[in-house]
Image 1 (cartoon, rainbow, N blue to C red):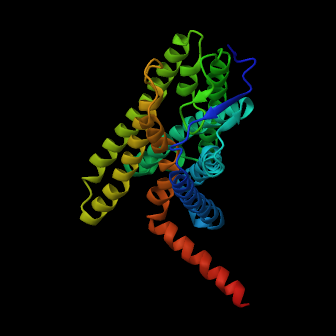
Image 2: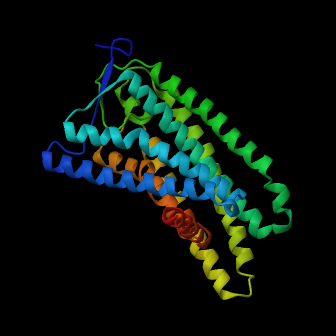
Image 3: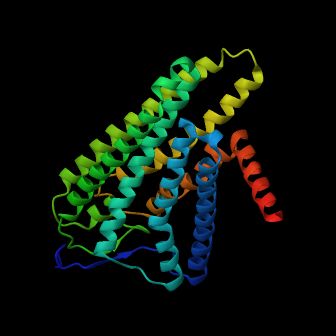
Length: 312
């Protein structure tokens, strides 16, 4: 039986073998990918060019948009190409890269969402201390700490996964390489891997989720004291979608990653993977940025400036 030293490639599972459904898969994924890229690139451009948006909140939004554009680029284009060409093969090096990058981007995205919740909490509940707590230096330090710890976290999990022997099959029951699918292919003892994934997932994911919920509870309690009903409505309409996106992101990720490897993979795993790998990067620009008046005004200013330059 081939082991991890002789297995040079893996086979990714498609959503269907029927050509029409494969074409529908490629078209729908391509459209979502293009919308995701355009939305996130627009946010990066606007928050970079407009000086009035050079604040901590938009600094983290810009980083989140860059992260989302990169995150969705790891899995979606390859899945679309495979669906159109009917190809399923991915090299071992490509599989290692996908596992490392997916784990890295998921980890950093979760930390950024947590930091953004803290930013909103300080801005609303401790406005006088906001310039000190969320100073530019602190923002850069938190971002760098997230990236560096993410590299270490992804490196440990990737190395721990590919030290195993893979001898049952090379068919990955997923449209990209991920740790749970690879653990099901291993003929080595994966109990330590599963414990590590579960402990780190519940510790980091659960801890971040609790902190985010706790921050928004404090925000809601402060917002309810606002005398103006319009301000309360605006705050609730902004915060509730944030919580929903984080909940979908974490619940779908928990479902895929925290299930025991002894449970057979199903099409449900692939569907839930869409909810943590494609949906958040698609909706983040809309929920966090494009619904805010500041972003809308900045886009209008930039468009006016471009049209004025074109006239000249």
